[in-house]
Image 1: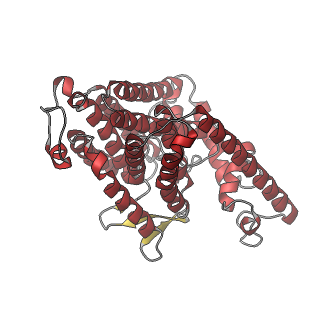
Image 2: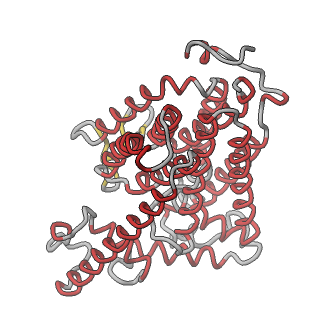
Image 3: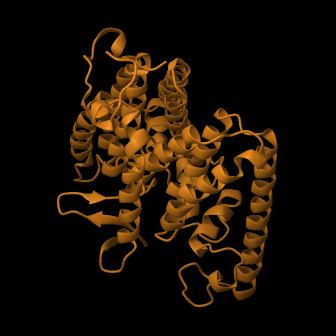
Length: 411
């Protein structure tokens, strides 16, 4: 096998055997374990209803396994030449999804493209697109001091900013907030000046302060108008200093006080999720024997996706929760290990970016179920129900497997 390739076509056509040192078995075993847990508890969460989403999840996992295998067989450096085409396709899909009459409107948002046999959520594959384009820009650019990196930073701001803006228009805050940590982690690995991160931290704290002030003004407005959340009259949105919807402000406020303005919706979910986690004890109530989801206290619309960890914690307790956390910890550790084994910068950036993306998903999802962060609706990888999300996760982990398999082909 040559040490390098002349054309992307050669990169695409190179396949290796999936045995021995050419294949990392840790990640697939962990993914199978997590997926099995997910299917089992999706079934449990919906046991009291005639739904069969656990069967659909099995189908998507089967398709995702095929996608994982195909992506892992393609030399990851192929994406160094073709990631911009993938990125452009994702941007077109994001534009289409917010186009009136094209995108499908569900649950107060327009986030899906109806393909007949499948409702695609473009915000999922765009995560991989932004990751690959960011890695490509950093590989081709000089990164050092802020002055040296200014041109690169503008490119990255545009590459990440355009999809984030389009995603927020849907609106889909949960998919937008996972992209900045990925870009920042890849910048950190690229040895960008620490002054940049100090400035970024200051900007983040300023943004948090502005959000807090906006929410404070919202509470004053709500109290003064004796406003009910379900009343369309007197909405605060036109008066806010940030382009947030009132329901998003309610989510932030419910984090501090679940009973404040929306106890029947966001606040209710927070309270019932906390009860679910706390009532599990050490060993849990037993699989399919949880009461919060079975009786509908933990809303059935979210129990099998956003709050699946609450179902696991109630039915399998602290030990079951610790098992899930341990599997995710092993997945993250292995991603960092593969990043260290990569022989080139592009492979390292891909592995680090994917690992950080999964870490954000895991942390935010579990933290919101126990009341540590506001509810955002971020799903739990390979456990929460969702077709587009499952395929996106398989694609991303396939990229990491490709980094491992082709690491020795470059020096």
